[in-house]
Figure 1 (tube, rainbow over the protein chains, first blue to last red):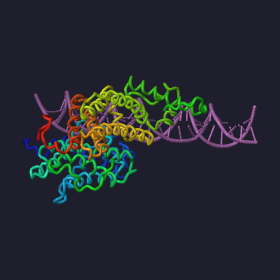
Figure 2 (figure 1 turned 120 degrees about the horizontal axis):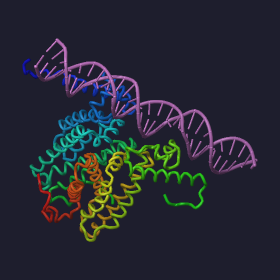
Figure 3 (figure 1 turned 90 degrees about the vertical axis):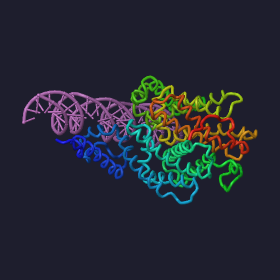
Figure 4 (figure 1 turned 180 degrees about the vertical axis):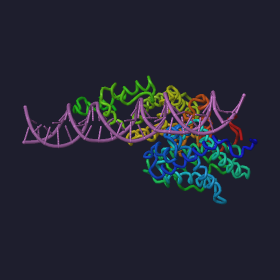
Length: 223
Length: 223
DNA sequence: GGCGGAAACTGACTGCACTCAGTTTTAGCG
DNA sequence: CGCTAAAACTGAGTGCAGTCAGTTTCCGCC
């Protein structure tokens, strides 16, 4: 009866196992049959629990989806930051990261649609997790900005954190519009639009002396 | 709407009347009982049509909500542009307009939540209507920008339309986050955040010569 | 007027997310 | 070890959005 907590109380362990089993079952079924066509009863059965038990672990079917997505997105983002192109511009770096996320969403548009629609309207626990994700991405983006500010390449008088925040907002808005359209637009098109939005936002970071001049930007010159 | 041809073929007229009756019934019931607590059967009954008929006019309950909201928002925006403060800064004008929208959303947060969640994921007809709304607001914002560019107050080398687009994106993202939090944040707080986001985006419009100098912007100077 | 066909309409029905009263499992304690 | 209470679990049940086979209404045409 020692205080060894190595193997947690049986209860806790069971709960963890069930949670994991539910997530795994849901992931498989969503991928195979699609989100809408998968019933919560199926998921519960595959996970070896009662139909009602699922709802002790996740507040809703959407909640479950968000929990799954969150984990996957973490991996996608981590990889994207690990493979940042060398000696690239800030804009290129941003598009590398957000492009990776878009590519991920593109892999399963139905899931992505459901996720993006629900992500801000889930249970408090998952909502916190979503914000954690957003803040995590923004913070790493802010680092990339701050790094250049420190080098004097970018105007240090502008808050890197705020710019990063705005960029995420621009990304989310564009992504939603794209998913809402239901693939009527190629993802390349989305990326191009996002590039424009980012470029416009990032302009505030250009160091004062050189800004006004029409740099090397021969595109995007409509009224 | 409108274009009420005096005697349309009876069929067309009946259809219009039913559509209007459904919208009216839904508006009343949503306002009284709330969105979730109102059933489509109730709406149909109040409108004097069969339960299934509702779905001949609106693809889903959400679709119906979006149709209602769209009309109301039009009025809100029109009024906001009609009451723009005189001789105010662009930022002030923007906050006047978007503030009016936020105030409207605040009046019935449950409806607003449902609307914002669904607006980009509705039937093609309503989706087009939503985009029309977004583009309409952005276009009028762009006008306000262009006007100042013409006067030489703002850098004319930046696309007013793009800036306006970005502003709407920033608004949507902030609004969603706010509604997702479920009123845990005061709307004043939301407005303050939006002001920051807008201010940062609008910086790109500042005329070149004066920009770098810490002009008349004593707030927002954190790392 | 009356006929044929199409468009509009209906409400009983279906399927599914989510609930909850009742049951089983676990943990703490003498 | 029982014993108790609470936590976890269950699956039959509930309510509702959305469907569809069958019915009614409308319209053009002879």
